[in-house]
Each structure stands twice: as structure tokens, then as C-alpha cells.
Length: 509
Image (tube, rainbow, N blue to C red; front, side, top):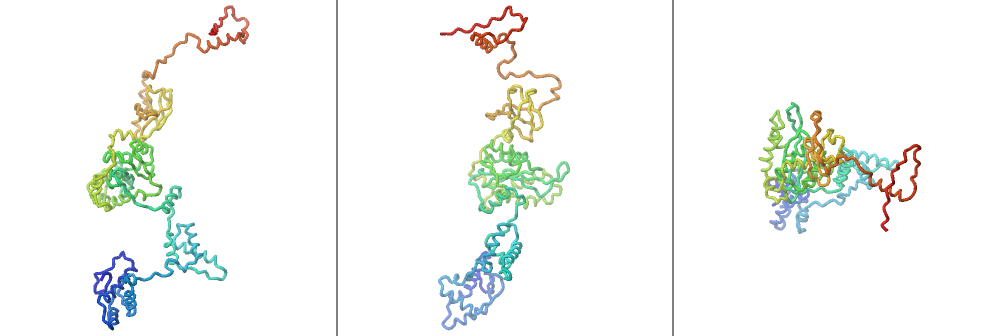
């Protein structure tokens, strides 16, 4: 017989996932089921029931030996014989008031719901204590309020989904919005259909400190870039900070190893939103997608990988007393390439490396390293100082070549961690015009100066030899009016040979 039998057959047990209600029904059917398989003769039913009542049976809920009376077995027997589904007939019926909480009045239920809406972070005990005071205050004088018990209040809150909600650490707009979204919208896992369609990028705070070359103990940061479909780690490296420089350094290596993805998902950290990072992704044609603030579950694949790093990689380095950053990176690369990429993943029954190679893939070829370095740079506009042809950038003066001295505003492209490579770009096309170098005041102290480059036609000054055309036109128009000059000559001035006015032009008609 399936299900639990007498304790003479301890090998048969109910699966732990079955409901207690169904387990008891199967136990009852296993006890009286033999009476249906081999029906007793007329007048022998009572003896068979007494024999079954004398045997001990194992309770599926407690595991203890129990016995059942003859009348109980007789009731089970006739209930099962009259039903088409004997197991369903032997199942305990639900109470009439199941889920209705009759001991909780409508007033108490409304008070609990109002308390929870106002204070979702309260514990159940605090809700119960406040409900007791509220019920006592609302009761009429001399009347004893119908106060429910603590277990009743607890079951009511849990049945309505009113669980405790911990307040965010920072009551900012983003934290509140993330909490509301988690409460109102369902959370579902996802996976892309193509390799290279989406990459995940994140930093992880290490649990071990490393000894630097300066003799300092520092907790490093692990930078990881992972493909969404295959869970392949495109690149993994430890750094001493969580900066945009470290992010670009690791991401560039991942791009050169695995190609260009179509999109990249990160959180809203300062390094992820830096101008160099966003500009580089836009230049390479990679869609940058950010998670909601205070919503790490949206990047759950990375969070699950951190647990594996700590339980496998860092656990094997516990015996290394003086752990350096170089040794940690070497061990990390060996672990991810030799173990993680070759271990079968539980979600798709294949190794990340095999799933990555199987495709299908939408990755693109990666450009050379120089193009990557030029991509992850920000572009700024600076006013050209005409006195010496320089601009100010990050607190330093940079020299603009003299052939571009006609520009009013200069557009420069650079990375804040690499001020040795600054380029002047065309604002309209984005093309690189030339490299720009810092002003060398020591070299300029020798007094030697370069000749200015020509920027167009010859603009050297010429001494004028005639009156301006506009002045000649004004004199001719004034003479054509026939009026005398509207001024008096200075007494004693030499007017013997006045300058004749210009001849007005003849009328063509």
C-alpha cells in the first residue's frame, strides 16, 4: 500500500513535501485499504477492525506511534466505501471559519490594517500592544473589549501579507521608489537569448585584506564583467579602488577578450555614471542600462557569483597569511579559467564556456587598444586665451597650436586619469585635429619663439593710400544736396586753397 503503514514497515514514509492533511488521509486509507482489497466475510468485519485497532501506526506529523479506536476505523471504512474517491473522503474537512478569524472583530481588523499602513516597519508584538490600547480606548465605559490573542493577530497579519517592512537606510526619493516598486510589481528572473546581448558589470568588496607595496593593509575591490546568457566571466580583476579608471581598465580587457556586446547593465555608482564611461559606451555602440537605486536584485546574477567567489576562491586562500594584490589576481584568473568556466552550471546543465561557444552570438569585433583608449574619454569646451594661445584644463595650462589660434572655443577630449594624452577635436564632426600638450614655461624662458603658422590669406598690415570708399560716398551725397557745409571756419585759418568737393555722379537719365 502506498503511504504510511504500521511501524512494522518503517521503510515507507510520506514525502516531506506533502501536506499534513493529505498525509493523514493516506495513512487512514493505508489502514483500511486492505479491507477493500480482501473484503472480510459476513460477520467478520468487526473482528478485522479490532485487529487493526490493536496495531500501532506512525503519525506522519509527529513520527510517534498512535492507535485508533474501532469506532473510528468503522467510520473511516464506511466513508471510504460510499465515495468514489476514498482518499478524498478520508481527508479532513476544512473548518467553516477557516481564514475568517471570527475572534477578530471588524473593528479590530480595520484598526490592524490602518496601523500597518501607517507603520509597516512595526513588529507583530508592537502591533498587538497598540491594538490592545486602541481597543480599550474605543470600548464603552464599563464594557470589556473583545481582545484577540497574540497568535490570532499574528496569523491575521501573515494571512493578509502584512509582513514587516524594514525602512531603507536612507530615506531618499530613490530608496522610497525602489521600495514601492518592490511592493507593487512582481520580481521575475530573466535571461537573454543570445550571447553578447547583455553583459553585467559590478564591483565587489573583498573579505580579505592585501598587503600593498607601501606596507599597508587594504581591502581590495573585485571588478567582474559577466555575460548574461552563458554566465561566462569576460574579465575578473582586483583593484585597490572603485574608480572609473579601474572600471575602464577592466572593461577594456573584457572587450578585447570577448568582443563588443550590445548592452551593458550596471548599478548607479559614481564609476558607472562617470563621463568617461558613458562616453566610451556610446562611442562603441553599447547600450548602457542602469538598475534602479537600492535594487540589487536586478543584477542578481552578479550577486550570486559573489557568493561563489567567497565560498570557493577566498576559502582556498585562507592559508595565505601575507596575501598580495598580485598573488590574489593570479589565483583569481586561475580559478575562473580552470574551475568556474569548466564547472556545470545548475541552471542550464552546461559549462559557461561551452554555452558561450555554442551561441547564438550577437557580439561584434573589438577595435584595437588605441581606439578603446580614445573612446573612454570625456569632451569639454574651453575658451582660448588669445594672449598666449592656451586653455585651462584640470588646473593646468595647455598650448593650442598657432594654426588654430582663430578658434574662440576649443573642444578637448581627455580622460581625467591620463592628462598626458589630450586631443583637440572638431566640434562638428568629432574628428581628432591634433594632440595638445601642457605649457612648458621652463622651455619658454630661453626667449626663442616660433613663427606663427598661416591660417589663411596674408593679413599683414598695409598703410592706406586713399580715402575710404564710404567716406567718399558720404561727401559726394552731401555735395549733391547743394547746401553749404554746416560749420563755420575757424578765424585766421588758411582757406585760400580749399579742397574742392568731389564731383557728384551724373544722373544716367
